Length: 499
Image 1 (tube, helix red, strand yellow):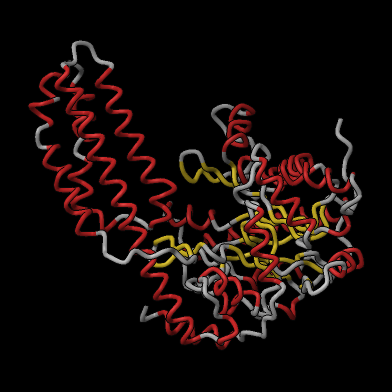
Image 2 (cartoon, one colour):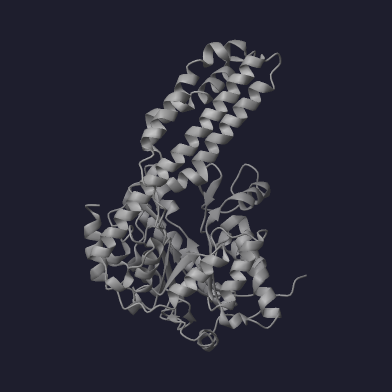
């Protein structure tokens, strides 16, 4: 049995930790007086099996970063396991004390192993009350029974006996689901806050048990307009917490904020008087008009790649026109598979008609391009494995793959070009609207510096999966950041409307 890392973040220990790094600023978490690095280690995509992630976390902790954010569902528990492993390594070596670091984790999602375990526990039924079946492979729950199990599992993976902040993770899934099921908004909101109230009551008990220090809510709909059907009302959350007593432990909210998602400035960032820590996430991953925009500088091509793209698409489409007589006529398989394969080898025709409607460059790189390439590869393999396939069919397929790969390469250049042009426009507008001291050569520096300069934000979470990212974070935190007022943010948001 593994030895548990005992202890919890403490005011004096966190302050003294940061004092060991000259020139390193400290942020104070409202409501707890814990001292933390203004950029926290975001653990969304880290995993215990990836050595570079282990090195990055250890490097961050050794260089003054002392807030780590994770969740039960991040990399299917692998994120928490990595954190526990690195904490053990550094505490046993004497490089770090548990009291010097703040750990945040969250619960609510039922995915991956979590989902499989619950399905095995009660086949055909719900293992816990109030589970929301949102979509295939994704359920959600904040019922106390579920939270208790999740907290236990998180503590085991983190190898700790206390989590400093334990947050409800996107509870607004209930409201999205209620809208889909046609539940009237007033009725849905009433049930929503009743469920959060029960969760808060349970979490107060866990504070008394010593398994958590504080609790809170991480929600993507805290910053949206109150008229939004999935709006999470901070005032209502505070009201629920106060109903549990003056010494309640609701002490943190987490929400997205970046140069393109500025909703938090409208009403959310006035909560410091209520002693609630504010943690922003997704500083570089913004959603603008339902598109993912990565707020980083990209190397821009000197010439527009679209003319070459249209030429390569035309070549692929011309090749596809021969599919019926050159391939389909020789395939001996069932009609459903025939139809499926015909659809695959009309991908060029689809792209030629819709390439301007594809999602962002980043979605393309991470998902769509790989999906298309895998689909074509699978289709080619399916045909080549059939009996009595003529050599002419294999030759046609080989030529198709070459033409298709040429299109993918050029489409990647095109999407990168359009993204770089957009990011150049964002940078240009920011240099006009935001204070000069925030402006740097790189868009990512501007995006992070604007949040570091916003005093109403205690901590911003940054993905630090590589040691180079950690070095960038430390470099930015050592800069001076004169305050950026909420009024400046609102003027910036107004300018964005014409963007």
